[in-house]
Image 1 (cartoon, rainbow, N blue to C red):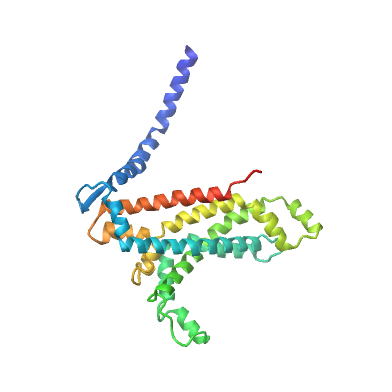
Image 2 (image 1 turned 90 degrees about the horizontal axis):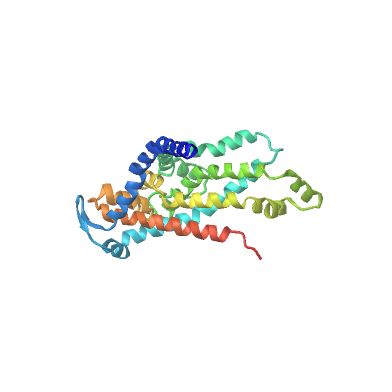
Length: 294
């Protein structure tokens, strides 16, 4: 009896210790999630809303701006994430070479962009790729083109600028994961392959990549989630323009909530599209990457 009382007292003390954290989680995480789910079924403008059932879901299928934002987000996801993953792998493989001089400098230089201010670097890219910016000036001096490119005024080039910006910022972040994983691979495996005459490219393809599979899966999922939530770069560089060619789902949610006449219910519905996309794509990535047993 005494031991059981002591056990119950210890459990009670444990719950008391974590109670403040649970209360904060409930207030700032669980409650907002439940509230947004309830709001996704509300229709109306501003604070004048009422239950509308599936009206917001039907509105999604008829909203050309939402379709455009979904398409743009898909383009950024399909184009940028593979480029960033491949670049990060190549940088990590190069910087893992013990014979490379100034490895510390190059690692810091590539990783540094991901710790810079989002707003600061976005404004810098906007200035660099302006019609009279340094990119056009340099290209004209080097005679790479005859006339300046309207980087931020043309839909295609505006997407290119956004892809370059987020690739520049986040490639180093993924590279650090790959570099750490590569340094944990047993060097004797590479030595045995080298003695057997396996070339460098084959060692990378058949040894390094399979052993990095869990890390590649992790970075791919994280990069996918980040791209689906893309907001800062688009908002600060192009504002979704020109002609909504760089509008993303997150920026559209922001516009529905704060820029246009507030439509909180519809904005919540669009936000759950991102939740659904994250869940489905993450599941598919885990499904593709799982080990298949004979």
